[in-house]
Length: 127
Image: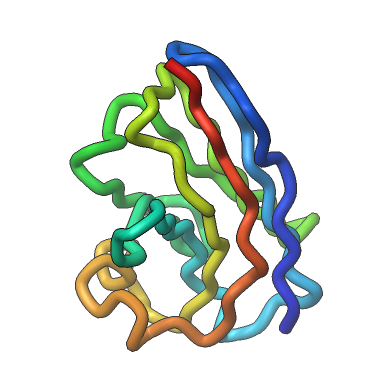
C-alpha cells in the first residue's frame, strides 16, 4: 500500500489548510488511517485518526476543536481539515495507515501499530 499526501503549505496564523492522503488500495492495514506530525527538534506525535466507516475519530488534545478528520472510502482518501492554525502547528505532517480496530488505538500504540507511512508534507504557520 502506498500513501500519498497533498495539501501542505504556508499559511498565516488563524488560517486554514486541508491535507489529503490517498491510499493506493484498501486493505485490512488501512482500516484505521490518521495523521502524525513532527516539528523541528521534536519527536513525531499523533494528531488524529479515523476508522474505516468514519464512525469513530480521535484527536490529540492540542488540535481537538480545530482539526477535523474525515475519509472517503470510494476514493481511499483521508482528509485533515485544519482551522485556526497557530505557529505551534508548524511541522511535517505524515499520513499513516494501521490495522488497529479503534481510532484511539492509533494514539495508544503510535508508531508500533503503523503498517504504512506516507511521505511527509510540510505545514508552516507564520505569526
